[in-house]
Image 1 (cartoon, rainbow, N blue to C red):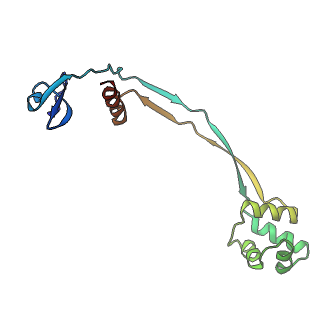
Image 2 (cartoon, helix red, strand yellow):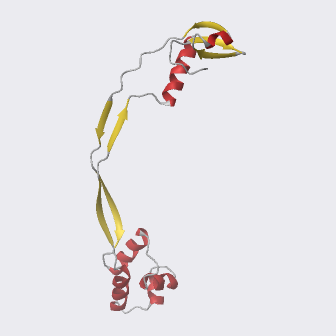
Image 3 (cartoon, rainbow, N blue to C red):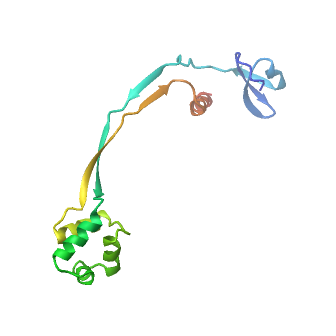
Amino acid sequence: MCGAETKLFYAIVEGTKLSVCKHCGKFGKIISPVKTEKIAEKKEEFFVEKPKKEIIQVITKDFAAKIKKKREQMGLRQEDFAKKISEKESLIHNIESGKFEPSIELARKLEKFLHIKLVEEYEEEHKPQISQKSESMTIGDMIKVKRRINNKE
């Protein structure tokens, strides 16, 4: 109750089982001493993660110009092109004007029809992070110890 860091005792204070010092034990009935587990000295360990590589598919920056140029080379109007690939003409217009970036799926569909390259694979490497693990007690650790003590009784 007072927070003193001395030998603790279990006591019943106003119907509640508490861990108290000998001095605070007078406010209730002392049941038994608290069995404490030795807590390891602080050890700090460093873990270095290996760099992680991730392959990401991205749409080329000049997708709008590529699509428009190839469509015009094929002699297709936006309306005809849209019908052939089963998409809306407004979508084709927005893609060619650069207002809308196609999804990877739609870009693959356009690549197949127009025989151009719109999707590039980009390998991204995540830098390793140094994480520090400390063996000091956390609130969660204290709750686990408390549960173990309560289960033993």
